[in-house]
Image (cartoon, rainbow, N blue to C red; front, side, top):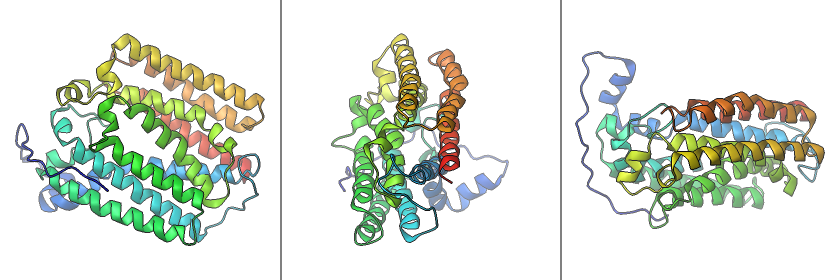
Length: 329
């Protein structure tokens, strides 16, 4: 896995020492490296990735047309190894992103959903620390996938996880750095919204094209989330040459793109329902995102916080996971 050479990184202002000691501040000052590894892994996003993995497994429990054969849910070696492997892949991708965006994140005014984890800023560790962490996590992820390829995991699952790993690292790191070329949003949509749930299906049963089709509405909602999340970072991103859509497009165009994604998500849900690919319970689950998507459209480019669009994605992920497991089990 290729990583750029170590960069000399200078923070604009030193981290202020607080007289108020909290468990968080104690950890940052006492075990800065462990704290940085934990924070840069983005635990909340790892939880969402675990949920999307469970979504794929739940889809597999419903049998055809999502998979080619019936699947009885139980705790198996493929299920456990598949979950651990995808988390290792996710940690690698997150470390790579935090390392590549060290300059951007130091300039950004963070929100709970944007501007990075702040792991390097808070601990004052050099960016090279996360460069080494990226390599270590990547070696672990590749090792787990290699073990899975010789037994527990299907070839389809290994290929999907390897694709997520390679494209996820290429999203941030040179020489590709897709996010700096205006390609970050569609790549992120495809990896998190489409491939990740299908990977969960592939771990336990052979997926069909229908497995990808039924998560298209969710993938489009992930796109709405990305437009909103990148908006607060646009000034910092532009200063370091990161060409996200929030940097390249005017606010009116971003709002139109958001609306288009939301409308197409709704229309594709109806089409999939009429095509009998989406069970009624799962179709109804898509309605949970509607109020949050409307709220997100009203606030996009007008307020800094991407909370409404983030909520739309998370609420929909929870509802879909519950819906598919309800149908299958």
